[in-house]
Image 1 (spheres, rainbow over the protein chains, first blue to last red):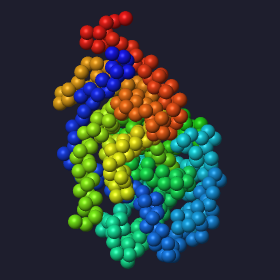
Image 2 (image 1 turned 30 degrees about the horizontal axis):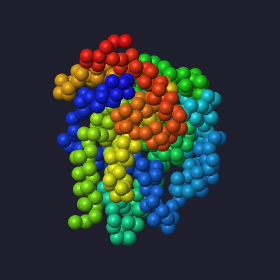
Image 3 (image 1 turned 180 degrees about the vertical axis):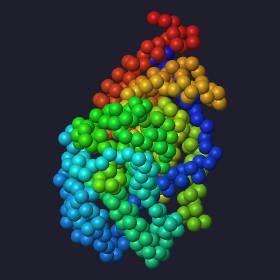
Image 4 (image 1 turned 135 degrees about the vertical axis):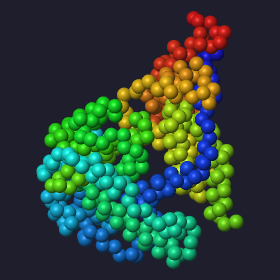
Length: 270
Length: 171
């Protein structure tokens, strides 16, 4: 028997079998619904519906004049990001971010060090609240979602499109308000909100200062990346939530927070 | 019967038939039962969202492709900073499932391989896919598939020597 044959045989060992789920349908539908909701917040899954509702005039944040920071271009359209100092987004709390000095796949922009405060007493509750605010936004009512997704008369389709659009807008603004400008490119690109949604759906394994996080979750490497990219001041003032059902790498997520002038803001999620 | 109901029925039938095979594939691919279940669930949910536009006769292949891509993408986020470790013993001790000692050894050895090498092995020797198809699936050149498979096999070879085979002769 050759090595390849032996490998083939072992890969087909009954040991790899897993019991089928008795509630498979329910499980998959719940998961699909979560995926849809995660996408609704950024408008990705509703793109087609939005197209149908293109006639709806939407002024979200005034004219989308500027982008999210020095590294990003403008984000025109209904999901425009407000300029530095725009109404509702004071420059004191939402200053311009900076490009990471050392960029990685998950850390490209850094929060400004201006006005940072150490997250201390009450931070666990405050950061979790921000995580859920962004990661589990108020969902679209199922009837609206279903009406939009299935074949329905054109009028209903358009109504649900408007509802979805309004919901997506609301989620978008909420996400901007609860996060630092360093995270805005990820919100606009969509991957950021999906990551936060994943993190919000699973239990918290650790919540605390990044600098004193236990080795269990491999955060020493993360600390090094943040220090190299954004500087030690940001590391000192970062609070991290590690979430997942197990410490298994494929399942855990990390979300990073800071506090500026008394406001807790999310600035990255991976 | 409305088209939507028919579509839901056909998806239910597909899941009932394909789930055991998909879970098994997920387990071989990830090496961890919980991660495998997570991967299968996520991939089937994605498939459900596209079910009406899918050619149902290719659905299993489609889900497997989603699983491979999702698995590789997850690891891309982690590989730079996660050190591979031993698989917990508890995973192998599940009395509900039949386990062989050789299988357990292979499982541990596979868990130490980089995710791309492991994926290549699974697609090549579990799925019996040709190199060109694996390359397409993984978004790389066939030469890369060949070299990854060769490195992975070299790493596993000591485990797969004849002495492991019942009645086999050590060299």
